[in-house]
Image (cartoon, rainbow, N blue to C red):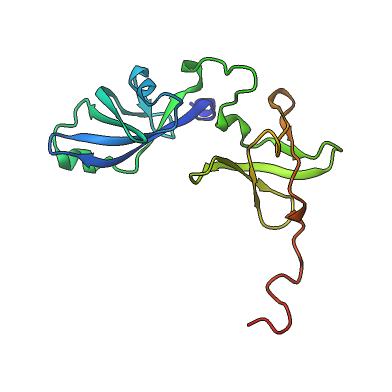
Length: 182
C-alpha cells in the first residue's frame, strides 16, 4: 500500500454530531460540498476505509450526512475530528490555472530570478483565502498569499512555483531584542 497514501487527497473532516439519529456535520474542502456524496468510500490518511455516506444535505461550510452503520449520536460523536481522503484517481484533472492544493505541498519556491526561497510546507485557509506556508532551508517558516500577484506561476511538472514575496520577508536578526523594549 506504500504509494497509495501519497495518492490521497484530503477532502473533508467530520465535525460534531447533528441530532440524535447519528447524522454528522462534515466540513468539506471540495468546490461543491455535495460532491463528497459521489465518492464511494472515504478513506483515512493511511488509505484504510473510513466511512460511507448514505445521504447528505448541504449546510454552511459543508454537509450534514447520514453515514452507513452510524445510527445514534454516540457513534456519530466518536467520529468527530476524523479527516477524510479520497484517491487521487477519482478526481478529474484540474483545468488550466487550477491546482489541487495537495499538489502544491513540497514544491520548491523560487523568485523569477531563480533565487531559492524554500519549499511549500502546508496550504491553509484561515478564512481570508489560501495561504502557502514556505519553509526556507534555515529559519522559521513564513506565509505567502496564494494569489496570482504573489504566485504568478505554478509549474507542477517542474516541481516548483515562482513567487513574488513581499519585501518584508527578510527577518531582522535583532527582532524581539531591541534596546529599551520591554
